[in-house]
Amino acid sequence: MSKKELNYEGFLGSIEPDLEAGILYGKILFVQDLVTYEADSLPQLKKEFEDAVDDYLETCKEIGKEPNKPFSGTLNVRIGPELHRRLAIKSHSNNLSLNESIKEAVTQYLEPNNIGIHHHIHRHIRVEQETSFTDKTDSVDEWTTYSAAPTTSH
Image 1 (tube, rainbow, N blue to C red):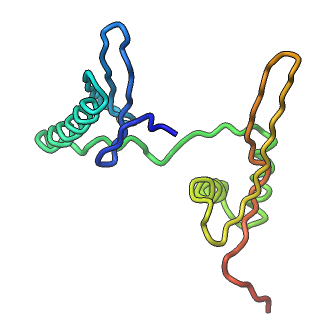
Image 2: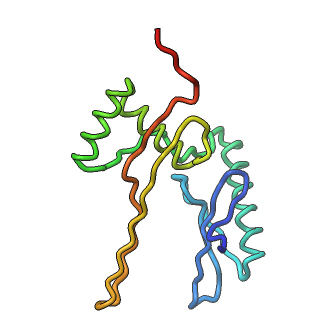
Image 3: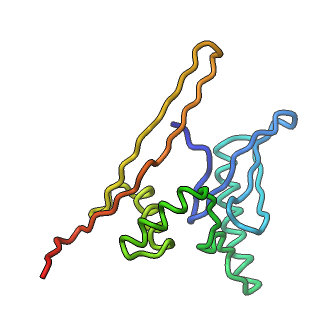
C-alpha cells in the first residue's frame, strides 16, 4: 500500500501532480488556513511540506495565534431514522447517552483491540456478472458492548 499523504509534526499534507507544468504540489490538510507547497520531485515535495509546516508554526508564534486546530470534536452524523431509533433504544437500555454510545462505537472502530469492547461486523459483497458491475459495501450491522469488569448482583 502506498502512502497518499505527507505527515510531519502532526500535520498531514496532500500530494498532487500538475501534469501540464510537470510539478508536484500540495497543501496542509485539515486546517482552515491555506498553506501550500510545490516541488519537482517527491523527496523535494516532502522537504517543502516540512518547511511549510515549520513556517506555519513559526508564523503563528510570531503573530500570537494558536496553530489552527482543525477539529472541534463536534460533527453532524446522518444515520437514517431506523438506525437512530435502534441506537436510542440500545443506548437507553445500557444507561448511556446517544453521544456516549457513538463515542464508544467510534473508539472501537478506530482501535479494534480495546479490551472490554466487542463489535460484530458483517461484510457484504454483491457481484453482478451480467453487467460487469461490482458493488462492494462494508456495513456495521450491530455494535455490542460488554463490560470488561466482572459484575456481581446483590
